[in-house]
Image (cartoon, rainbow, N blue to C red; front, side, top):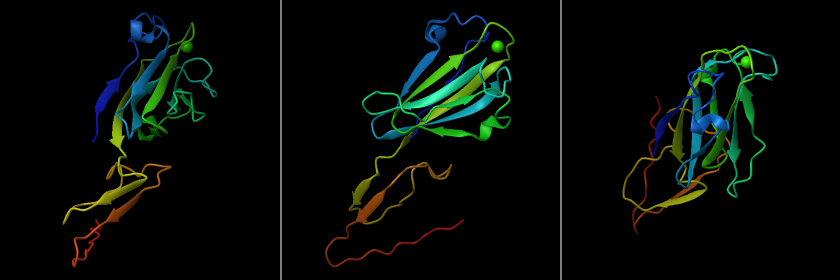
Length: 167
Ligand SMILES: [Ca+2]
């Protein structure tokens, strides 16, 4: 299951007046048993080595809605190939924080997010007579910090043949 959407800041970084962005925080919530994958498609924020002036920051929210310590912060100077970076949340919730200071602005950023189904983790049992088994988020990239086990139960007097399709 994947749910895609896009995330954009105000068109002008110096006038953050829309209701959504006044506080500079956006909370993303996916369905239960999903993780959020957030990818930047454009990032043009004031460059500064520690991203102190203008930045976008993403962190996970834990199941109890407390903030996780997995925050990452970007501005243009740190990640010139930002479109290749993927943020994977620890849960189905994440907070995106955007900040700009009083001077020097770029075009802003654009990002997409997907809620990736991890309902097969940590354990699932399959009883169908045939099927296909894939890792979560296949074939995009293997997600980190997952521990998944699958038990396949064959009907009595049957056994399974498993084929790995290598490409
Ligand atoms: Ca600035």
